[in-house]
Image (cartoon, rainbow, N blue to C red; front, side, top):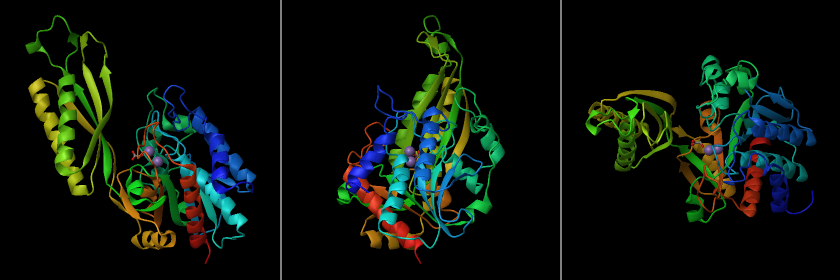
Length: 400
Ligand code: GLV
Ligand code: MN
Ligand code: MN
């Protein structure tokens, strides 16, 4: 191996940095199973091949590279996802995969021969940016989402997940899941706790419960110039009130509520909309606060719809319960790495897998604290510290 670890990180990182980057925003458009994400999946295969790691797929779109017997049990799994939100940052997801390959290199250079197989993973559609349900690949693998429901999810162009995958997803794979004894996901931090703690790497304690609710508001499309104000049934008013109410209700509870996506029909400047659809993303430290928040927003939406003469339908698209990562494992890793332990409000495949096997997460410092935005950042030196930490953790878990 040539150069220091930070330079080796940069060299490998630069191989994928241009893939799916939007020249205008500088952010990434790497939607699951579209051309840029497929290019990254091919890159995963070539990196695995370069290291002599056979690659398998689970029939759900998740990729696995095996160091050690692919049929072996008690394997340690590590990895993350390639897909991005619209104009997302570079690190959210890919950092965990690039770090996994570099951690293998570190272990090999140090002459470490794992007693348990080590498996590197690239999970499909973690963000839910294309098919609407986050952690789609890990939910399918674990059976948290039924294969037929996933198969029928459609993207904005009407393409189903099954069509994008090239066939119906396999769904739950207990045979495969049963071979894993632990999962560790390394991820860029999506906040500034590590900046405040002056630490390059942290260990996760928990993920806030969170979910997505779509609200369709139907009114009456009409002429902007000729319809008297008193005669309108304007769904935009119901929508706008609901956005403000969600913000207020979240603040009152110390929770988070976001409406970051909206669709308007017919979307014309001089027409009162006939329909507005918004998506509420709500998160809180505990499930009671989350359900109280969502109930309150639903109440405000219904109340305002009565006033506006509009009709509303609320659809729960996905809910992820509170995830408390294995406390013993988190403490062991925090001691091993001398790293702080912190909770997060962001969802991860690790949160889905935690219901099935001992799972831990490592976070790498993000100087801006920004994520799901082109402004997301991480320094090469901190990414190298993340690789070193991941290699130590994998050695600890794979060597008896
Ligand atoms: C995933 O990044 C999420 O928390 O939405
Ligand atoms: Mn994300
Ligand atoms: Mn992520």
